[in-house]
Length: 310
Ligand SMILES: Nc1ncnc2c1ncn2[C@@H]1O[C@H](COP(=O)(O)OP(=O)(O)OP(=O)(O)O)[C@@H](O)[C@H]1O
Image (cartoon, rainbow, N blue to C red; front, top):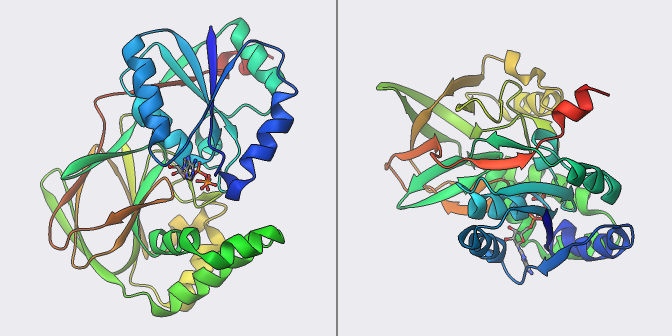
């Protein structure tokens, strides 16, 4: 099976390239490489593979943004199997889907390649924006947008203190964030949430670099889960934040969770939005945005049966 690595040199705060050089030395099977040039490039490359119609293993060497673009491009193509090698900063993709730890594990997979059909999240706001793991609005989206734009981040990354920037922006954004009103419509039923900090639509449990925001999410059940954190003081929010790594935040009454096939979300302000942790514009004011599972699926590396039989 033809194997292509799509490498995002900018992933992992620019460390992906070094990681790739080390990784490439351990590969003992034929492969091709493409290095992405800009945001959106990975999706364009994969769409061209889809049109060509060949059976391929496409391995995203990057973080969640790289994988989102690859999957958005591969959607609907059964002949394209998508895998990952984690080389980003957060790497939540590999927590919910499969990620290859070594070149040897890829070689092993190539002996009997099997695919698994997975759901793809979609939000409709004028055009369609797709997400593999999650899309959300509010505090978390604002923090990640500010961190990614930060010039302090580049400087601190050089001294390996990238996590400090994140913490700094959590504190700053938390202090000045204006909570918003969210109207959620699900199968004709409306519910209004006041004082919302953030709302996340999830296809898999993890977001934000290892936080188990949506413990019950499954990647192939045709459903998306909505988590709304609302009506909570700053202090208690920090407490909830501490519990999200284990998934036990769901026991707080201020954390609303639901499962469904579609949500229409309307907000009363221009709120930061993310798809898989990357800035995805701001929400329109008083205009419903719909979140659904796409009718186009994508096909992931499946090693489950082999792992179970060990
Ligand atoms: N050559 C490039 N230069 C700059 N940006 C790029 C390039 N190629 C791709 N990108 C963009 O870089 C963004 C960030 O990449 P990615 O999300 O994979 O890494 P990350 O942010 O370090 O990891 P994570 O999302 O797991 O935290 C992607 O959204 C992608 O569009």
